Amino acid sequence: MTSLRSKITGTGMYVPAGVVTNHDLAKRMDTSDEWIQQRSGIVERRHVDGTETPTDLAEHAARRAIEAAGVGADELDAIILATLSPEAEFPGTSFFLHHRLGVPEIPCFDLRAQCSGFLYSLACADGFIRSGTMRRILVVGAEVHSTGLEFSTRGRDTAVLFGDGAGAIVVEANGDGDDRSGLLAIRLHAQGEHARRLWIEAPGSGIHPTRITHELIDEGRHFPRMEGRMVFKHAVTRMPEVLRETLDAASVKLDDVDLFLFHQANLRINEFVAQSLGIPPEKCPSNIERYGNCSAASIPMLLDEAARSDRLRPGQLVAMTAFGSGFTWATAVARW
Ligand code: ACO
Figure 1: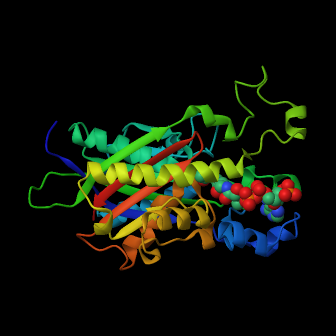
Figure 2: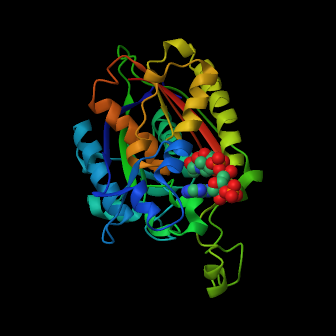
């Protein structure tokens, strides 16, 4: 290993124009603005208009990140794209993005770790960079949930939570000995015994020889299923755990962190985590009220908003923590 360190040099995000409010959803199912806001903090979310695809969202976010990094797409060494709602079941989304960006024959792949997918992808990029095999990697989180939700009372528990969006970063090798900025530590975890507690069952090779049938569709088994309370319970336990573990690995004290960027699954989860650790609310920005849960895109979207405002300034410490389906959970700590 060399002394190379990974550094985020550019960020970008994109959401489709279509705003869908809680009141809009209440016209399509038995729910209410009050129920959704009280349980999740969400006021509205964005949905694609029927023409935009995950690749479109990813391309906008990626181009903004590349521009912010001051590099050309032809200077990238790889693309890693985290998603649970790919453009196509295979090959995913990254290959379509690869073509759209017009990059040379660099490697690209989709990474599936759901809401923790962005941090898992960042860990992969960090490994490539610190091993010295690559110098500049585009990491993207992109989701189009709205085309895969059940907008009826049967599907209301998940339909109200998710939104469409994309976030991207450029990660580069920082070999400059005087520059202390960059990724300090990253830790990843999973617990596969809970895989069925938040999942989409069909189409899948594990369920039926033809992967999808009219019966499966009638039963709604191609829509997300979630044990909400179980997810909540695990999230509020695992997020503080992995945050502390990663801060220890980075030799950083909790109080010294300037900004905590939590996955935007549910405002209540994040408030619970912040309270349990004694983190003041002003250190925990959120955008879930505007965008809902954008899964793998949520942390890079929040990071982009922080980086483009004065919330995150050079030299500050930022901790990013996610929890999601799998179950998966992760934290990355970086000096900006
Ligand atoms: N509108 C109105 N009522 C609803 C809705 C809705 N959208 N969804 C469910 N309900 C009803 C249920 O049917 C249930 O009715 P019942 O008592 O007659 O059976 C009642 O509300 C309570 O349902 P619960 O699931 O017990 O509600 P809870 O208070 O636990 O809140 C929630 C649900 C918000 C999903 C909560 O469990 C939660 O936050 N879980 C965490 C999961 C999460 O955030 N997932 C996001 C994706 S996962 C991720 O990214 C980590």
